[in-house]
Image (cartoon, rainbow, N blue to C red):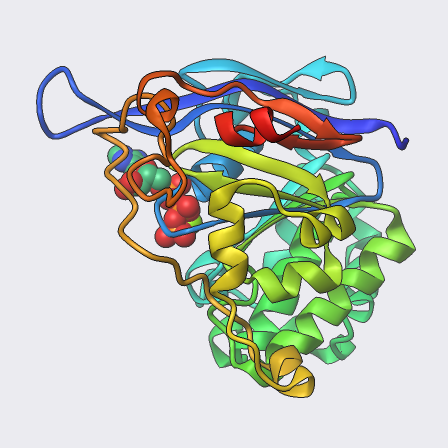
Length: 323
Ligand SMILES: Nc1ncnc2c1ncn2[C@@H]1O[C@H](COP(=O)(O)OP(=O)(O)OP(=O)(O)O)[C@@H](O)[C@H]1O
Ligand SMILES: [Mg+2]
């Protein structure tokens, strides 16, 4: 098995809620790893804590509890306190390149910033390096002089990817990188990301709502529900024998359409019932209020994560019993 690049252990992030003494338990004790040269898909409904997890890994938030380590070094501190050499190793691409790139800056200025901060190349080689980055994401060299506001959504996202590549990171966190883009552009961005990962040997933590995309690109998939990871497995095993009732619900709600059509159309997750508030997480198994199979124990005891099959972990009383 490939070595771990990132190891997250019992990670929590609570935010103060509007009401006194209450907390939004956005991330509520999660464990996962991202291995070398691997795409880990983090999938969940809106509000399940995916972006908060991304920001914790990036160091944009400081954890309430738990640890994050990168290649064996503790990086649980916020990015402000992380060493510059560590910061360059983990980069992020956000959902909306319209807001993550400054419209008043040229592509050259945007890509020049991380190169200068991290002193990736001497000043005299800056333009050459920027041209190389543009080439890596398939954009013409002369884009260096264009203002980001003049670019289309897909091109902007390619610039955001080039910016993430500037520091030669080991891990890129992708927070729904294609969901704000037209379907026709999405495939190009995904293709570019997959090619780059292959060429550069990076790892991706890929956050998405899009289960059918995960089927095509993820090596392992983690399902997040109300601040917890409820199932994590290698992609093939995950789709062949999903164990958690929530995973089964998500998979069954992907409409079956023509294969060709399905490849074009990203599927957003649809499931029965509403996700409860992370301020008032149900006791016992947090999924019991929506679970068609919930029994008495599910209302009382919080299930523990256990390995049901090799590398396939699940957090469900019923799955524990079945295996
Ligand atoms: N800074 C914050 N202060 C208070 N609550 C927050 C904050 N950031 C996130 N939350 C809450 O934490 C929960 C998880 O949010 P998060 O953005 O991580 O979800 P998500 O899975 O990324 O959702 P989406 O799919 O809509 O992007 C939500 O209930 C959200 O309202
Ligand atoms: Mg999000």
